[in-house]
Length: 77
Image (tube, rainbow, N blue to C red):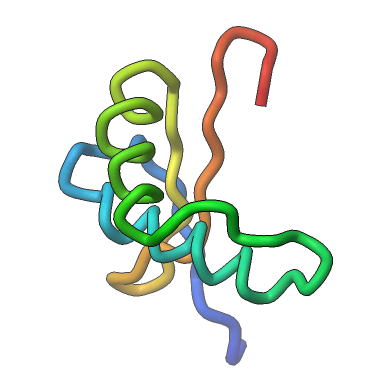
C-alpha cells in the first residue's frame, strides 16, 4: 500500500477562486527570490475576475484540497 495522496485534475470552477488564490500566495511566500507584488485581495480579484473567465484553468486536487493549478490560453501557460 502506498502512502502517497492521489492527485486528480479537473477543470476549475468559479467557486475555486479563493483556493486557487491561496495556492498562488503560498507559492509566492515559499520563493524568497520572487516578491509578492500584490495583496491577497488583489490575488483573489485577479483569479476570479481575470484568470478564470479568460483562461482554461485546471486544478490539482488532493483529497478535498486544491494543491495546484495551471492556466492555459492557446499555446501559452
